Length: 195
Image (cartoon, rainbow, N blue to C red; front, side, top):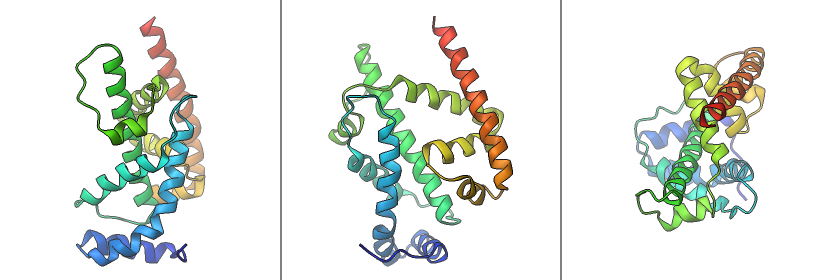
């Protein structure tokens, strides 16, 4: 295992990578891999029982998408992992929707082997419901949506979330509390409309 870099050095590597320094990416990979696995494991732990746990497949898919990102101006470690959290959520939601469409007989696009390994056997309707509620929250209050994404999906602490968003930990706590209530109401309203 490599010696972890301090957050400033990690930020410098992210910025060098963005500027096209391939060597920076090679130094960065061992530094971020374990954290990406922890992040992916948190996502996979929320999947329904009986789900094939394929943390590595989710990390690999997120990594492949990250390598293609050329336009992000990395601010710091927290920003980088916030982007990773969003990518992983989008990968899982896309795969769940694809599998759900196939289950209903729809003409969903062909699933790759990697997608099948990430998703497992059954889509989690709760993941899709949370994603849709979070999108609705983002339209109303984007900062609260980011707080939820970083705290719930990214597993960040109040302090890490505050640092990533440039706000106080007290503001994160208030946003987190009200966003959870808002999302719960939104999801209850969505379930009532389906009945």
